[in-house]
Image (cartoon, helix red, strand yellow):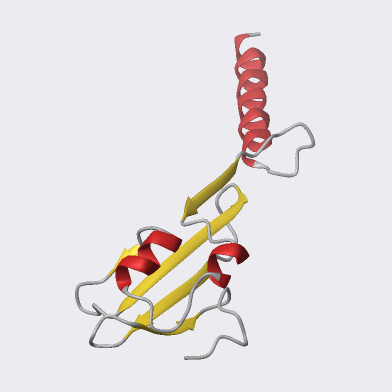
Length: 115
C-alpha cells in the first residue's frame, strides 16, 4: 500500500510541475514585462538634426546603453512582451564630435528623418 501511495504522489508532483512550466494552460497568467526606455512617436517627431545631447536626453530620457567606447552613440532599447520575450524596439542616436545629433537608426527611426 505504501508503494502505491508513493507512486501516486510522485505522479501528482510530475503532473504539477509539467502544468506549471507550460504557458499553454488556459488559466495561466503571464505578466507583461517592460524593460528599457519607452519611446513614443511623439518623442521621435520632436527630434531634429543639430540638437545637443542634453536636448535629446530631455526628449528621450537617459539612454539604456551609454557606451564609454562609443561616446557619440546612444542606444535606446525597449522590450515589451508576455514573460519578457520578444524582439526589442531600438533607436540609436548618433552624434558628431561637437555633440550635435546627426542620425537616427533602428526600427523606431523614421524613414524620412534627414540629417
